[in-house]
Length: 607
Image 1 (cartoon, rainbow, N blue to C red):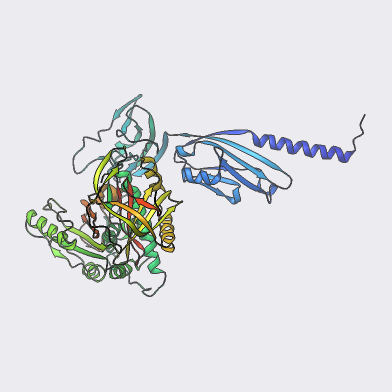
Image 2: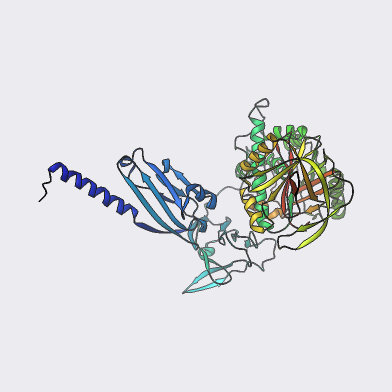
């Protein structure tokens, strides 16, 4: 018989309680979440019981950095005590394990998270307003057909909404982004009869979202007025501030990557080219006229702080700074019926060198006038922007840019052919630029998972070509998903700090002439209100104008001499040295080293 003292009994009791705690926390908790929701997973006991503990999270057997890398929505907070996931997507499904090690206790907690792709939510609006009913396909997979929308009619019945066949200009229902992962529809001028339950499903009948729409009677409000908000844009009080220029640089970089992300979604598996500085330039010009919510929406779209009064002054300085490599021009055409405010006219000229010109009598004359202006400002790189100008057009804003840069190290003039490998594996014979011993800066950028080459151009500019590790679509998509403004900024820094090296270089001679869908892009940027009725009191305090169409055309050519590019945006309304061969899909970035921001961004899939 063993004699056990009281202190030993207490010790045994404590050990038993700790073991019980560990077993309890080690059990797996099953959690089912709705896509788009937020969840915080606790790691262990309350913080007071776990002072100084070390927390480590794993997702499907991999460490916490993989959680952020794979889903982009998971964040470890409170020193690891919680894992916050917002928004929850299908990429977050799986097993989460947190191991907590303290001085006197060690615990493990497991969660099995599943995601219900059927998104059920309610939205309340007042009568007469527009409302977006959201629906999304799962992030993985290609969109083969648009989703179907239904409305509950009671007694277990429902009717399919007629969205595809509504071709009128004044649509009641509109699918905002056809053939996109985002299948959101816009219901305009909601009435009490529009209230009810709406269903969004795949063509195969799988539920994607259920929306309870509540419509309340609108209060009697005075008609919108520009009273007290039609003054000129505020004067920049910080013209000599050292922070204003970096603010604009970072905002344009962020805007550029945001636009690229949207456009590659709108135009999947296609060549792509746009000038972020041209699109940004026209939105900044329009910002001169915007007030109230419209001003906030445009500021958010171009990624500038809402109290950044110096945006126009800095845009002017930027245009002057890069004039050696890029010429930028703005223009305003207006109907004489539209009484443009004096402040908008004066500030348009002061900041954007745009002097308003009157529209002519006929559509044909206006079409020719606009296309001639575009051809002149892009040095005939783009000669045709619009097919016609509707007779009711009140205002047309234009922004054109033209770039010409020579290779600092010339390629061989002798014609040479090469085989370009497309995403599907097909080979296409193309003319190439070739040099056996080209001096270029070439690095493998781990953060982007791409080999990047920097080619110096005259005018203090550079062409960066990002080559995925393979010619498959998944490798290209991986690079694109990692192309944040921060990642690109770090890439530029790394290549600037590195020394050029001799390499065998092969580039396809290409000519890109692209016209991305700007109407959809505007909506993706949160500017749907421009098409509905924006507050542009700085433009005119008496008449309402709405955006009828936005257009953007971009041209870029790689030739033996160098890089030629142009863009216009309108709003109407076995070797001894390494090799670099871009004979498979790649991403290109035309960068102003002087201004430290992107001028053109593109993707080459079909040479």
